[in-house]
Length: 399
Image (cartoon, rainbow, N blue to C red):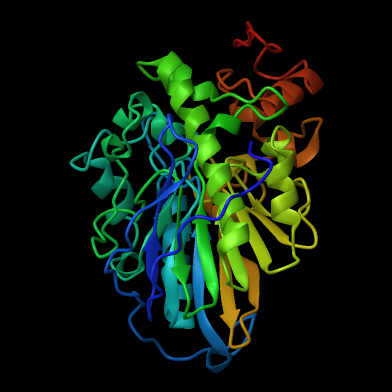
């Protein structure tokens, strides 16, 4: 991780939204800046003004929604029983969008396509798991996205150093048939909202702890090169973040990756940057842990930190299923709050088993014994009667 950030060339200021990608090739030390696109800011169709938990619509510059870990697959993944859960959350997102009337974008923290991601732009999962679930109005604004660990498993980008080989990569912000993700890590400037959105590819930190590595590379055709690419992309992500801290003039950052702050103990400079409030306010969003909540991940106080991974795929692991809403006031202050669905809609009324370790281990009932990150191993160790034996060679217990 770089200890200092060097300024990068600044693009010519634009009167509207600027789309900028910074990416280093593995053989270079300096970040490069792509030319801004000609994308226009996109807004939702007008809806009647409404009072919200944050502020009246007249007092806002705009709003946004945040969701993650939503890609339910009935055949191979998910512990919510049916697509009913994902659909209930999607319907509530639409209702909230219509209520707000000024949603500018959706932030998607990844694990969009359980269990293995998509293989290309023609993969039928784009329709079955996204376009067929989320109303066209919800998809009329850009979905700012990153990859989750599951998204890489069958994605050609896992084995390639070229971003254009990634099945989810799309640099055309006007093409709403796909997410907006011009590179694995990228940022977009919203001068009209006085904020930047910074998207970081951090799968190298999937394992958590001091020995970071991308565990899911074992499930790709190219474990060794997959880990090398993940490491390179993590370096690029950290450099991008630190450069934006130096170069940006915006009052707010919305920073997101697939992982909660608990996973970044091997990146202390990154955590220090997330806590830095000297020039701006930072709101960070992560997923991976299938819940929507604040307060029990590694703090970035005085800045704000959210888990928004209760989007429907493995939602019954946690207590809260839904998404996060953000509002930007006229004086450029960002406020955030959760919107939840009734857990019984998703998970039924069967009693919940109590596992040692509390909410962080509540997913053990559906443990598949595959994941060996530090959270999974800690929960298995605390619960010797759980469905899996302890790490490092976890497997299903004999009946």
